Length: 456
Image 1 (tube, rainbow, N blue to C red):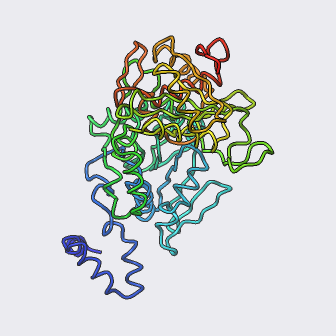
Image 2 (image 1 turned 90 degrees about the vertical axis):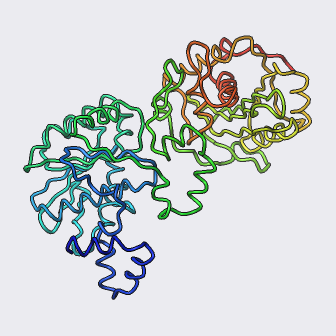
Image 3 (image 1 turned 30 degrees about the vertical axis):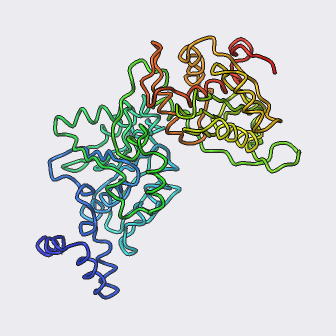
C-alpha cells in the first residue's frame, strides 16, 4: 500500500472511512483490517525520531499491548534476521499477555503470517525467518548471554517492583542488543514512580528515549462503555486514578509512611468467598482466615467526613489481608451503623473495633441499634493518628500485610500520612486509613500495641 493511498484514506472522516471499509469484498476487508497504520492512533505508531528506546507510558486500556505487538509484527515482517527479546514481569505474563493475549502477537498476525509458537522452547518463529525469545525480568541472569536486534518489554514498572532485579534485567538486555545496524527496544508500561521508569524518563532528555504519553480515555471508543463508566465512578478524583487511568507519573510525598511502591508490592489476588465454619446463615467469608476485624472511624457529623469502615483478616501464618473498604460518605449515624452491620454479617467478623473519641455512648448506642449482636469493642485514641499508624506501616514494610485488590481512596489516604505527624492526602481527615489502623492493630499488634480498650 502506497503512502499516498494511505494518506487519502486517513484524510477521510471516521464515518466515511468505515463506509468505505464496509463496501469491500470479504477478502479485501480481512486484509485491510490487519493493516495497522490505517487503524492505529498516531500515538500508537513508533516515533519518527532516531530513537533507541520507545517508552509508552500511559493509562490502562490505552492500547499499549496492541502497539507493542504490532511493532513486533512489523519488525518480523521487514527483517528476516530479527532476533526479538520478549520480556515481561514473569514468563506467565509474557505468554498470557504478550503472545497469547487478546491484543498479543498471535492475535494481530494474519494466519498465513503468524509465527509458530513453541512454549517448551519459549520461542516464536516467523515464516520469513525472524524469531522471538521469551524472558522473565525476575531472572535477569537469563538475559546475560543472548544477543538480540530488538526487544519488547511489557509493564516494566511491575518488574520486581522495578527494583534491583528490574534494573539488572534491563541492563543485561541492553548489553545484548548488538545485532543488526540499529537495535531498538519498545517498553510499554503504566506509569509508576519506580527507579527504572524514572531513569528512562530522565534519559529522554538526551533523545535516546522517545516517550509517548496517554490516558485510558484516549482509547475510549474501543473500550466497553460499562468499563469506562465503572472506572470513572470508582477512580475519578483519586490519586490512583490519575496514575492508572490518566497516565500521570506520581511522586511520593516526602516522609510518607506508605509509598505507592510499597502498596504495589503487597497487592494480591482477592481470595474466593466461601463459608467459614459450619454454622448456618447467609454470611460468606474466607475459610483460610482465622480472625476478621472491622475497623470503624465514625464521623463527627453527618455533614462531615466519611465513616471509615475497613475489613481486615489474619491467617494461620500471621499474615494480614485487607479485604474490603466499606466506607460510606456523608452518612447519618443510622446509615453508617447499618453499613457496619452489613459488613460484619457479610464477612462474619469476629470483632468490630470502633473509635469512641467522638462520643463513646453515642457510637455504642448507634451500633447496637443497627444490630444488637454486633461484637463491638470501643477504643479510645490516646495518641495521634500518625503515632498509631507508624507501627502498622512497619508491618507493611516487613511484608506482613497484603491488599486483596485495589482500594483507591484508602490507599490515597495511606500515602498522605507522613512521619512528621502531618497529613497531606485527600480530604480533611484520613478516616479510611484510621479505620485500617484500628483493625490491623487489633489483629496484628497484640496487647502491647493495642489501643486502650473500654469493656462493654
